[in-house]
Image (cartoon, rainbow, N blue to C red; front, side, top):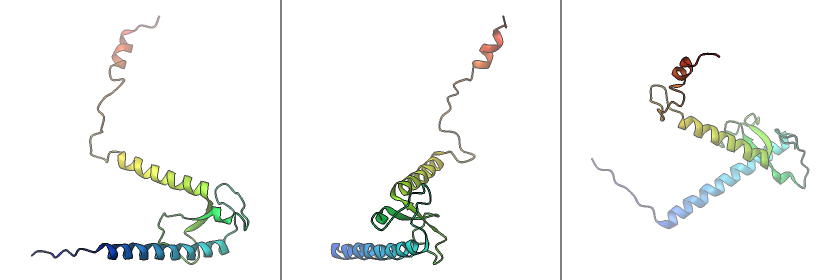
Length: 129
């Protein structure tokens, strides 16, 4: 049985992308406004305080990194300044990359070179003097 593939025209794709961006913007605006009403305008990491003039530098961070998880009680959010928010995402990304690079159990390590393999034999021949 063969499956029929439908090709989307460029205008349909453009419309889909525009709708997705609009929906994302509305969703972000909604939880950002909620978080700014619920929490004090202080970065949860560095403690920097914000006022009406610089509150745009205060961002909403999703603790579980799932931007669709927006409980009404705000339990998945914390307010972070743009610098701490960038740092948090960089640490999360770096952690994920190092997990992916680590060999799973049962797999051979990527490197077989042992730098100190013959050191024990060399030290046995030396007499304390």
